[in-house]
Image 1 (cartoon, rainbow, N blue to C red):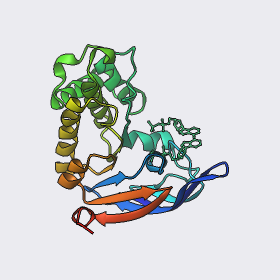
Image 2: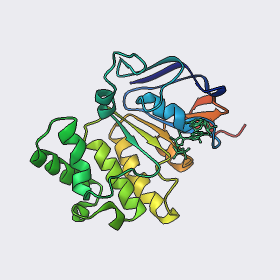
Image 3: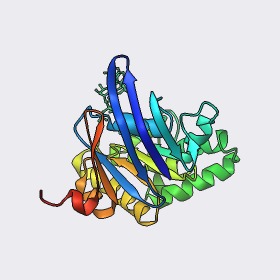
Length: 227
Ligand code: ADP
Ligand code: ADP
């Protein structure tokens, strides 16, 4: 589903990705970890075209991300992304947040989009909060809204960039629970996280990055084996 081959990226004279390669098959979860500044966030943003890369190829469901002919907004609509800081629109209600891109990008009617939004809020346990504004919700609730918003686009895969790193410890579990459920339902996911309990539970492989390089890419059992 996601194929990353020989990807390198420079910011000016600084190389932030060095010949990175990995893949995520349909229905698999791959966790990306490594020290701060090692390029995890940059790599995952390259996958849906949020960051350009200098060399190499990335395809998602056979579509080449770096190809100038690729319609990136269209691709992004199908490759859901969940960020560390939720990135919800603060001046719109929760259900409006969920409906917006469905209407603008997928061309759904506002009623249809709202209905789909409500169904997904139900699924993440937030139906009662549909008309609230993001600022009225806890961090854990906002992140569950962000996941519901990604799901509303009927994504072919989901990318997560440290989805629990900005949360108070007591809210991490509720977000991971939703992610585990998605993984168990067969959603293809590439997840930057330090939550190794999550990795053990649902990941197929763990990719470890350091200084822009993928230094280990191993099945989860092997990754956690004592050296
Ligand atoms: P991680 O997600 O592993 O913490 P990042 O992908 O955020 O790492 O960053 C990798 C490296 O790229 C870091 O050294 C960071 O400072 C650098 N970097 C990220 N974005 C930019 C940018 N827009 N311009 C220059 N350097 C950047
Ligand atoms: P996150 O880790 O939440 O993805 P960061 O705080 O690393 O975000 O970066 C926020 C923004 O700043 C990103 O768009 C990133 O590309 C940019 N950035 C990060 N490091 C640098 C850097 N050294 N120089 C310029 N821009 C950077």
